[in-house]
Image (cartoon, rainbow, N blue to C red):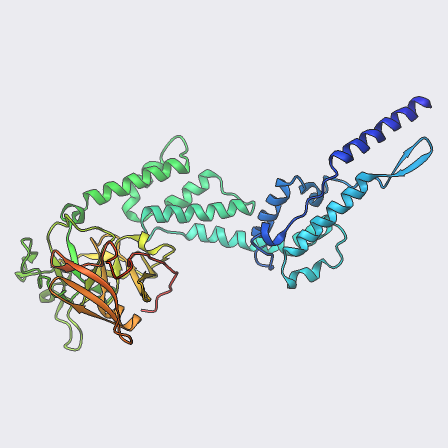
Length: 449
């Protein structure tokens, strides 16, 4: 009997000592520690951030039931004393419950009125909203099965399909490596059928990281061997309008050659012996368009772009849309919805990959560039003067060695750029009186063309 009492006393002493060490309460500050509030549609994201917070403070056992509530009292030698561990557990559990309540919106908190512990509140939210996550799983699996490269660059395509896979992993429905590779290969176009067949016939499975490397290398080889990379052409005049699923370019800059007449590399089609086009747009074969329809023409300066900087923008008085070859100019750009192309002077159709919106900061006001088309294979960035003026209520004055953008209302100069190689460029560096125009802020913009 005495041995039993002694053992009980030792256990109680250990509990008291342990409670003193753990007598620290952790307060969860939902306002500063949790950036996302549960609104009913984002349960998975909310659960991830809250679980990470609880795990970091070693409190996750309170909500999953593994950290059980201690006994309320301690019994030793016929005496009963309050258990401090019980008091600490209750206080900490209520602080967690308060953190949960503070991290949900007002429409959700009404469902937690009956919750007495943090575990009850956790289970209520799981029962209410976990079912909706299954709908999200099905939507993501449907999306990844139909996700195709299209006109996107290989880097953008691989990044997009990996993002879907990562989101499935976050909501506890990860794809295994084989399924991810199959979905990736199924999304490739016919241009990649050779490498796709080779990868499918491998004896050993390929990891996605290795697949990423091989597809990027294959795309690089394709671009290197394509004619456009062997003889690059700088398109400096680009009016864009729809005509049978394509965009056509016309209209010269003031100092540009017209119809490529000053170029040393004319394209002459042998059937009609006319320059500036190929068989697929030859009017002698296809027939001339009606008089009310604009004939597509192009003005191309066919010299090598030795000194042009790709992030430069060239002012183009004949362009109907802003065009960029650098997707970095359009962060978060929306993939272009369609198969339209930008048609240049030699009859080549350049694919339009994305569309977005960017802005140019000046010392006076922000100049907005809307409906900017991302054409990866174009050789430089073109800024439509007409679009710039209409969108921003400004004017552009051209002088022999520079140009000036002025506000229509105040007539103040907003921007000044130099003439380089007979083309008007936005400046690389700010002029003494003007701020840099290259502080670009890009917003997602859905087209209405």
